[in-house]
Length: 90
Image (cartoon, rainbow, N blue to C red; front, top):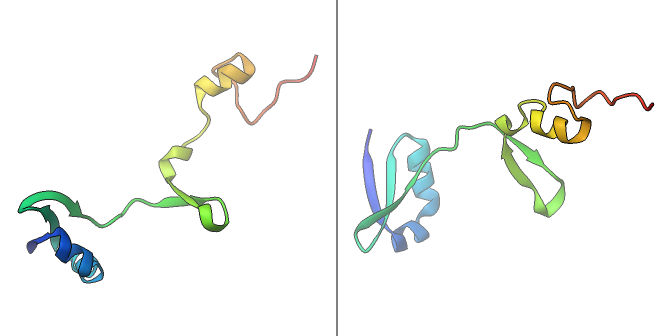
């Protein structure tokens, strides 16, 4: 695997080409004054898009891994309660 280090100015002017290199398997490091600052990496984690329109937010899928016991306890007084089932009024 090839590795390349580019300065900030070069990264700004050639970002698209650098992204293509990363997608092709190269390691790209961006440096400031010759010192490595950040690495460009491929984003491999699946994500869910929340919202519509201009203000969309991307959230990793593992955020939605099921009911949260602490929240169930706050709402229903029972950490084992299923948040999808509301207790009967009574």
